[in-house]
Image (cartoon, rainbow, N blue to C red):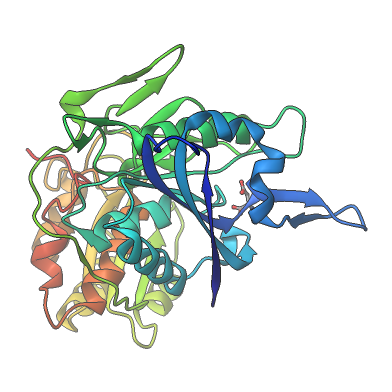
Length: 354
Ligand code: ASP
C-alpha cells in the first residue's frame, strides 16, 4: 500500500493559521462518474479545483492520498495501521488531522484509531459524504470545511478537541461512540450514549464539558492487530449448530455477544454450556447489547444472571464497533497488555464510568 503527499498552503504570502494533514482514503466523498457512468475515485491532488473555497481557510494543508482509494467496505486492519503511521509521521508538523473515509465502516476505523493513538493531544477528525463532491447537492463540501475548522481550532496554544472524532451532518461525535445509522439522509451517524462534542450552525459550539482534556503524555502508536474476533448476534430461534460453529472457529480468541436489552440471553442449557466451554478454553466473551441506547447490567434479570456465573465480561455501553476494534488491538498487542482486564477499562472515553 502506498500513498502520495502534496502540500497546499492557502495562506501564502502570509503565515498559515494552522497546519493540518488531510488524509484521503476513499469513499463516496471523492467519486466522479467514470466513462461507463459508474462512480470512480478522482485524483485527490486536484481537490482545490473541486473546492476552491479551501483557499479562504488560510491553512497549510498536507494532503496525503492513498494511491488506490478504497470503498470503506474493503477496509482492513492494515489500513488502520497505515493511517496510524501517517499520523505518527506528521504528528510534530501538524496541529490537527482530517481523515476522509467512506461512511460504511468509518465508525470502526475511528474506534480503532482512538485506541491506537495513546496519548493523543491533537484532533483527528473523520468525515466523508453521502453524495460525491462533484454532485450539486453534495454534503461533502460542508463536511470537509467544518472538519478542517475543527481540526485547526486551538485555544491558549492547545487543541479545542484533542480526540478522535467523527464530524458529519453538522454534528461532532466521539469516534468510538458513533455508529452509522442512515444510508440515505445526510445525518448518517449517531452517538446514543454520549453527548455531542460540538454542533455546527452559524458558529461551531463546542460542548467542552464532554471533551477529554486529560493530560495524556507522549503519543504512542499501538498497531498490532489479531483478527481472531467474532460477533454473535442473538435472535429468537438461533440454534445450537450456529452458535457452536462460531464458538469453534479455528483461531478464535474473543467474541462480541450481542445480547438483548440490558444484556439478556436465552437460558437454554445448550447455550450456557457452549459458552462456558468456550470461556474455559480461554475465549473472551463480551456482553454487548443490541440496543443502541442504555447499558448492559448483568444480573438485573434472571436471563443475564447465568452469564455472570459462566464468566462473561461486561463493558456496559461500549458499541460493537469499539468492542471489535479494541479486542483486535488488545489481542494483537497481548505481549504488553492483558486483554480481559484492559477491555473493561475506558481507554478513550468509549465506556461510561459508573
Ligand atoms: N460505500 C461507501 C464507503 O463506505 C459509502 C460512503 O462513502 O458513504 O466507502
